[in-house]
Amino acid sequence: MRFLDGPETAGRLRACLDGAGFDFGAMAERLGPNAVAQVAAGELAPLVRATRTGDALDSLLRLFVIGVPVPLGPARRALAPVPVEALAAGGVVAIDGDAVEARITVRPLDAPADWVVAHDRTPRPGVAFAADHVIGVSSSSLALAGATVRLPGVSTLDIGTGCGVQALFASPHSRRVVAADLNPRAAALATLTMELNGVDNVDVRTGDMLDPVAAETFGLVVANPPFVISPSERYLFRDAPAPIDELCRTLVRSVPAHLVGGGHFQCLASWAHVTSEDWRERLAGWFAGTGCDALVLAREALDPAAHAAGWLRQTEAPDRWEPEYDRWMGYYERHRIEAIGLGLITMRRRAGGEAWVRVEEAAQDFAMPCGDHIGAAFELADFLAAHEGDALAAARLRVAPDVVLDERAQPGDTGWSVADRRLRQTAGLCREGALDGAVAAIVAACDGSRPLAAVLGEAARSAGVDTGAVARAALPVIRRLVECGFLLPAEG
Image 1 (cartoon, rainbow, N blue to C red):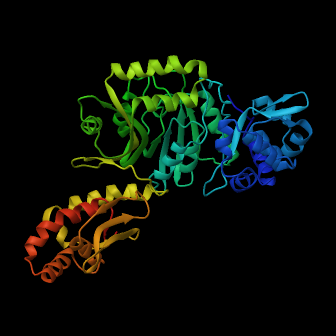
Image 2 (tube, rainbow, N blue to C red):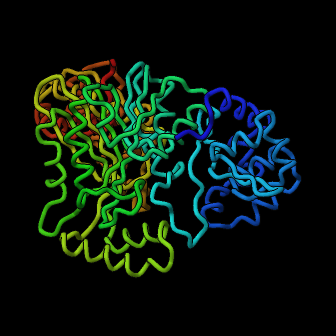
Image 3 (cartoon, rainbow, N blue to C red):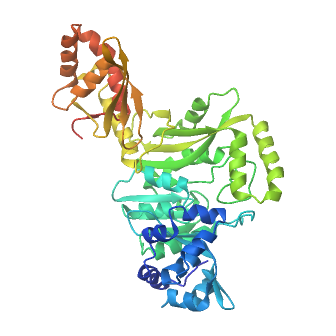
């Protein structure tokens, strides 16, 4: 299926959007910063009032963002030179007497480029989603886009592309992009998204997971799959036919065959915390034998009741709430699920050697974009592997530019005394951790000008203790600070 008859019509439609100033800044200025949330909640009155002057931008915002009818005359003027009938023929809008109403949303995106994204309109509160509904740009979509490791010139695969947002973000730095989705409607909307943005290096395909790419390999694979753990198979964007978290596990084990050496796979995922099982060990088992290093950033672990209620509140009509909630809770009880984890999985295909897996609880907010910092975690692991044991003492290290030291002091008998010291990253993954004054002094002295051994020797002399003792105590701490990106190699 297609929404427009080709890129030429899409280009003319985009020209009329641009001519009216239809971009993210104008949308935020005219509708306010919470417009998308208000539309989702059905709070349209403030938005309709904000667009009452009736210029072309008002008409386009009412059509494609707010989702209310526009009189035929103003709609024709706002959409010219594209005939309203041409948009109606493909299902972009519908003509009802003297009014025009959009059948889809076209939303300006807050991004480095003036992109727009085409997706299905959010149903009014109390109205169920269609089974093949294609959701828009969610907070999880933007989180994945902000965390993606972006290397220039790679081939990229976007699994479960939906409206095409991950493929869109990948298009500037990728030689080519394949965007695949099981849902034909999603493929059609992703195609429209690319055409409206003039993106010509994205190949949209229809098919399940990795089926559309057969033996092809990529330098980057991203996925925002239907990871919700539930008994439901009602919605393509939310539900997977595989039990519990098997879909995410299958991706983790299947994607490496489609990665070039050094290529990355990143996906948002859920995993079950099963009673009497260590969830970290269970999750780490997914990666055994994949030939990939893996970093799992676990963002939260939800109570099953909260997980079920959150998703049902978003997607189900009130008359389905109670029976669906009972069904979901029964499913969790049968599978002994005591919590549902959610986070970001990043894998890197190894050229050789033993793969590692790190599962890290990362509840703090990230500073977006943080893809460079996630990519650096793999490079720093390589650096540490090349400097095992005491060999790290020969390296020259420097404090990462986004690191600060926070100190909290308390008054005492002799004045202020430091009660707490914390190293904190102000960008990327925003890690932080406590350290004592001796380690803080060693970190401060790491300016890249001399080997770590010289820094440790100076610290030992200042404290009047044995250099070897300082090295034995400090090197494991320094190694951990390098692993987490507080300290970096002076070169590279």
